[in-house]
Image 1 (cartoon, helix red, strand yellow):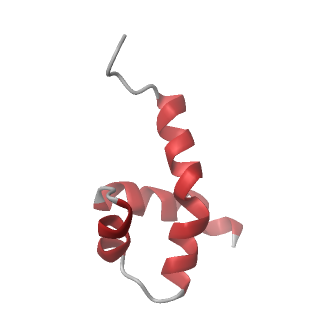
Image 2 (cartoon, one colour; image 1 turned 90 degrees about the vertical axis):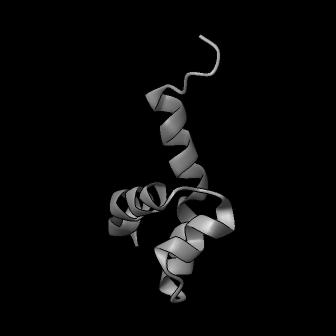
Length: 56
């Protein structure tokens, strides 16, 4: 199944950016700025914040 991203791959992508995204949120960057910086969608950034913010 070429070109299809599994839920596991999606989770790995979130994990890959989580520390950087949360650090930038703490530094005052907006979700939209972070999305542009890492070439992610706004929704992906919001999902990362939602999923990982309780760890900080």
